[in-house]
Amino acid sequence: MKKFWSTLSFANKIILLINGVVGGILLFAYLLPFIPPRYFEYASLSVFTPLLMLVNIGFIVLWLLRRQWLFLFSAVLFLIGLPFMHRFVQFSKSKPAPKDHLSIMSFNVRLFNHYKWSEDSELRNKIIDFIAQEHPSIIALQEFYIKESGSFPFYKYKKFIYKNKKDKIGQAILSDYPIIHSGSLDFPHTGNNGVFADIVAGRDTLRLYSLHFESFHIEDTEISQENSKRIFLKLPRRFAIQQAQVELFNAHADSCPYPIIICGDFNNTAFSYLYQKFQDRGWIDSFQECGSGFGSTYDFPYFPFRIDYILADPYFKITSHKVYNQIHYSDHYPIKATFVKRK
Image 1 (cartoon, one colour):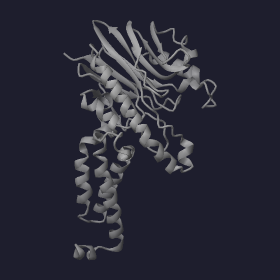
Image 2: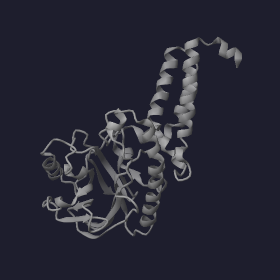
Image 3: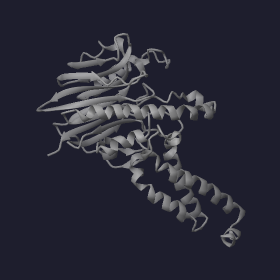
Image 4: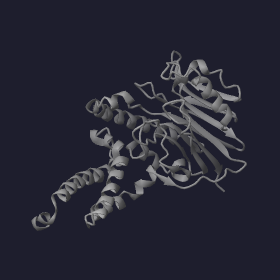
């Protein structure tokens, strides 16, 4: 080992040391989706797994350019991470939706700009016009403001669900098909929540869950001010709360008699323990099935973040996935997927 080390230039030694540290953290990050955050506070490091994977690829390129066999270390890490890569980036193409398809959209509308996060006074109208123009068969809206309950006459069936009667913020499920039952999961000790609606679509009845898991409560201004310590201190508790929420959801879904479609703002990446619990149940991610690119759903200037999802029971075949990343009406982009029943 000493002989090998002595043959390296000073620059290669520095690069190798940094490569080793990044590689060790990345290898550890691959395990984080399987470790409950309640028992391990560093589970929140999974937020950085996509960035670490890209840096690791950068090391492969760097060593190859320097004509060093040391690229093999990062290459092995890349191969180990291949099963996770499709969660981050996709190259598939959506197929044209069949005539009898079911289209479902999910959109965190950020209260229709009620608290003026944007100076655009027409933002509320733009959101409503966008939904009217796209008109998916079913749409789930997170961060819905109670005063907008009369703004969607173009949907025949509507459910506006709040945790209690005094709440002004909740979720909405709008549908072209009859809603025969709906309810709330009532996540405890938080303003976030999960809701559901049983919908009769043609000859089938399905259950749509709209989930809004615990937020990180991190603003862009905090990042620009480099308050990194305060940000990191927030994450472990948020991850533990999300674990409790997904456990509550799983218990609720276990008693569902219908095929399930899930959508919403998960407030976490596809490398998290939260997301892994959905993968463990065999639900299909519309982005993994039919998405393309990074599929970023959060309007974050520094890195692509996919934190909004549509997933489905294998009873359904997903035929398309779309992110409306040209729609800057919220801090989230709308996403839509289309489905048909498997034959």
